[in-house]
Image 1: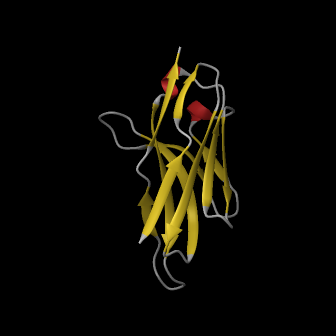
Image 2 (image 1 turned 90 degrees about the vertical axis):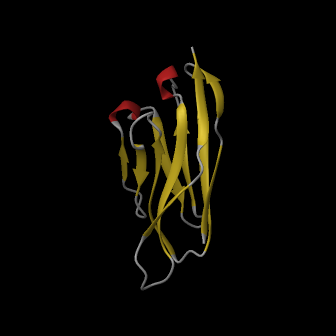
Length: 121
């Protein structure tokens, strides 16, 4: 079993900053891609940012230049530094990770329970 536990959400004013963290624990051989998604009502989860094991990153156009994703492979943790926050960034943010349980097992996709970010004007 694998658990992804998010933290760092909260309420800030426009222009403020937050740092989200997501720690993976459990039966982990290797963590591959990690990322952050947001929930769009009536739609599937939308990518915010993702990062590979080697550190390559990809961002949604709406957050480029404002958000920074990073990871600590030794701590099995991914971070999302959110700056210059806008009211439209308000949402539940979910951590995602592709994890192998052994050298021979396929990658499996795991999600955290989400952390709420609220940005007030």
